[in-house]
Image (tube, rainbow over all chains, first blue to last red; front, side, top):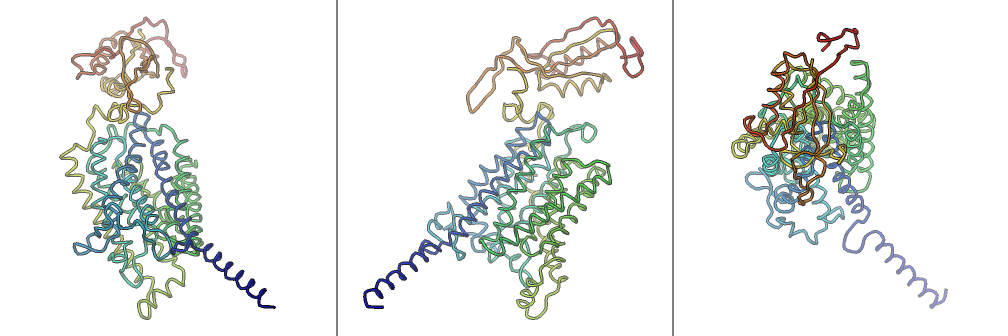
Amino acid sequence: MNAYTRRVFFTLIILLSVFAIVDASDGNGIDSGATAWMLTSTALVLLMIPGLAMFYGGLVRSKNVLGTIMHSFAAMGIMSVLWVMVSYSMAFGPNVLGGWFGWNPDFVFLKGIDESIMDGGVPEYVFSMFQGKFAIITPALIAGAFAERVSFRAYVVFIALWGIFVYNPLCHWVWAEDGFLFNMGAAGAIDFAGGTVVHISAGISGLVVALYIGARRGFPYTAVRPNNLVITMLGAGLLWVGWFGFNAGSSISSGLSTAQALTATQAAAASGALAWMIIEGLHRGKATALGFASGILAGLVAITPAAGVVQPAGALAIGVIASLICYIAIFSKNKLGYDDSLDAFGIHGVGGIVGALSLTFFIRPSWMADAAEAAGGSWTIWQQFGVQATAVGIAIAYAGLLSLVLIFIVDKVFKFRSTDKEEMAGLDRSYHGERGYGLINPN
Amino acid sequence: MKLIIAIIRESQLDEVREALIAAEISRITVSKVSGHGQQQQEEYYRGQKVIPNLIPKIKIEIALNDEFVDITVNTIIKAARTKNGVQGEIGDGKIIILPLEECIRIRTGEKGGSAI
């Protein structure tokens, strides 16, 4: 090799290696693979909100279909604006007020993260928007508990306050690096994608509000038939699809843990749906479409906290356990006679609790080994169970109590419950001046 | 025997239905209809005020023995009026009463007043 060819050869190598570096990252620390997946996940979680609107919208009477859909859509507007303004700071800023929530003045209006890249190579904007989608879906879930009977104006005020005083602190405790539940026990309370933060808090808050404002007119003697189970089924399908962003995106990376969460999610949703179908088939003699959809949701809700730590067999088991217990919960609701209209508590509250507790028994051995190392020797599943139960108990107590205070204030100031006339005429006409199915009439 | 046809506002359906049930008139047929009356109803679509040319209404049909006609008519009028059942507004609807020639219960084949 003479001097000339050697020079060309080395120049080529240098050029190639530069290209290789450019290929893996664009030079300022961004991992484009992880970022691309997080962008996708953010969009997938947003897709769950119209999915939820369709799921809930199909289950109510036709006079309330738009009002119910608007409960989800309004959350997209309100919670997103709040998230940019203060909520990201409250959720992911450093501890203030003894760790009640976080606060970082730089995060207000997201102005301090304009150019920041997180450790995993993901721009902080993407992380912030991804987390913001969870803040939207949680209050939208609550609305299922008090469907068909609340004033729209009061609802808007309620979810804004709820987001600030219930969601943001819980999110901070569980997911911020200095949150106290994040650091509880050997390796923290396990809440991979929001079993406590999203589902338990939404379920309990919904139950509290439903009990506070009372049942719908004529409940339970007037049959309330779903106006359109077809859109309910499509909504359930969109929720299943979106849940891949919800769970697999929660690894905030694009790698092994993403794949583990994705697999667990699919396994639990499927086994939950199948279990519900079999249970209902044995109990009632017919496998309903709504039952199948409920099983999908029960499985997905229960695997949400667990997706990062369980293996596929465990995920299948969690799906089955969740469907069984949620089925019993909804059956007993009908006996107890409270009006959790669309089973926000029966599926999300109960399913979330079942998932957060039962995951303890299916944790993959390598996670337990790491936890034992962190604890300095040994860490048993019962110790982790204690941590899980504490986290669940705190979420129930905090969300329940604060929701009671908030609903009391909002009801006094804005009259949360619809008047009899508004309720009989329907939410669509009373609060929106529109109808959902106008086209069915010749016009 | 009479056949009562009431055309009412969509928003009053539940109120009329609950009032009829309270008056122990529970055998009714309800359908969605559209039509012209004196009313011009305004709705909003994307902030634009629009007046649909055919206004959606609810039609209730009730077959009755003669002695129930008065209470039924009074109940519907009270519940279908939109200003607290005292004073009505244009668009509250109409009640039409027709003579009813025959009524037959399909299950048993019985005819006349007892079949209603």
